[in-house]
Image (cartoon, rainbow over all chains, first blue to last red):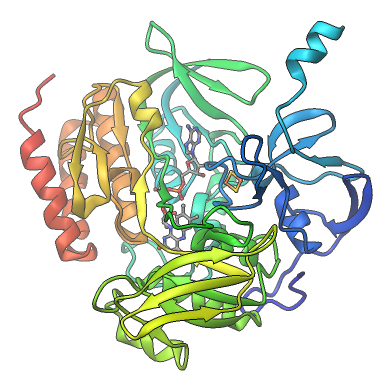
Amino acid sequence: MEIKQHPILEKTLQDDIYFYFNDKKMKAKKGQTVAGALMANGILEFGRSRKLNQARGLYCGVGRCMSCYVTINNQYHIISCTTLLEEGMKVYSNNSDPKVGRDVIEN
Amino acid sequence: MKTDVLVVGAGPAGIKAALTADRAGADVILIDESVFLGGQLRSQTQYFSNLPKNIDSGLGIEIYNELENQLNNSNITVFTNHTMVGSFKNGNIGVSNGEKVLEIQSKKNILAPGAQEEALIFPGWTLPGVMTAGAAQILVNREFVRPGNEAIMVGSNIFALEVALLLQQCGVSVKAIIEEQLNIQCKDTSKLGEIGNIPIFTSSRIKAARGRGKVEQVIIETPNGENELYVDLICVANGFRPILEPFEILNCEFTYKKGLGGWIPKYDNRFLTGNPNCYVAGNAAGITDLGPILLTGEIAAWNALGEIGLVSSIVVDKKIKNLWVELSRLEDEYVFKERLNLINNTSAIKY
Ligand SMILES: Cc1cc2nc3c(=O)[nH]c(=O)nc-3n(C[C@H](O)[C@H](O)[C@H](O)COP(=O)(O)OP(=O)(O)OC[C@H]3O[C@@H](n4cnc5c(N)ncnc54)[C@H](O)[C@@H]3O)c2cc1C
Ligand code: FES
């Protein structure tokens, strides 16, 4: 889904960068957000809604609708459309309620 | 942290306000919650020509680049990735990057948080592949990602047509434009020419979107019956609405003005809100075009400078008068009328 030749902009993103989505290694471009990188890899379903268990993905692209939550480097509910991708990032789907409360009790 | 002027939101309005204050010798802090500066202007590849005198015509992104250039050559302190999250009892503003909260003590605040897109609700509206037209524009112009292969656009305002066109240029097949109203909303006939052979269905709406884990099919209701289309992208251009949270935090008053995008903070002819330390600029002061957006930033900044005492009231009055004349020239007639309407009802506020 990557645009190699843009109809208007001459400069596209150049440098490759690698990350993991649900433990699968993927390639993206430096300068993309996490949401952009997922979409570039053809992934539309970022996670599932916690109550109705429905697929969720990018909706507004500007950090306002919270539809694009993912877990990054063990932090839950990160807004993927406003977070810049970093080399080696470990991104996971948010599929249910975070275990935050339980983690605190267990520790 | 102390400053003369705090500007919240580094879109075109906020940047213009910050630059104006900086050039007049004020200490300025400019914050934005995004990692990118420029707000929505940064993702715009349309050509803009209806601009204030001191700004060259160009693509949105080129106009942004010029503003960024000027920012880099200024004394403005810029914090990206910082959101205005609250205010302290003493009136100071709390700004956070998610880890720490900075307390900013400013003499005047200019809030320019911009606008957000209106969602559209129909069965299946939360399926991945349904997104706002703005999101599709961001994917193409900033992320260099094609959001789908076969699409429909919901809405026929100028923004809808521009994004439909952009998608087509990127190889997305736009199968239909759906408009609920009787007529196509875009007044610019040249845009309609560019759209070419994309079918436009007026008096039509989405009945439902379906698919497993993503959009695969959309059913549209037209006056001639139902239509099933196989698409993987549904773009929604349902209009813009001012962002209000920062004004709520600062206890500003609100009013409803349909022609300005709905609920907006009340303000007077100085762009001063119901909070005597808080000005408003940009699309948060009413949905309008880039030229007027830049002018509102300038007007707010000159008034703040005058209030702080950095510029004499004679100079401020002269600047403001000229800027209002330019605003009346550049702004859509109906929007400008609504703005005057709002201001005339608000000027009674005295501090
Ligand atoms: C997704 C989208 C696409 C758009 N596309 C177009 C288009 O193609 N053509 C067009 O003419 N108009 C478009 N618009 C309308 C847009 O509002 C204007 O074009 C213009 O960018 C508005 O300028 P502004 O400075 O008022 O706000 P913006 O450009 O929106 O900038 C506001 C800035 O404030 C920041 N902000 C908001 N709240 C806070 C807070 N609490 N703390 C810190 N920072 C904050 C935001 O991150 C943003 O950078 C679009 C709007 C959206 C939302
Ligand atoms: S897509 Fe709306 S917050 Fe990310």
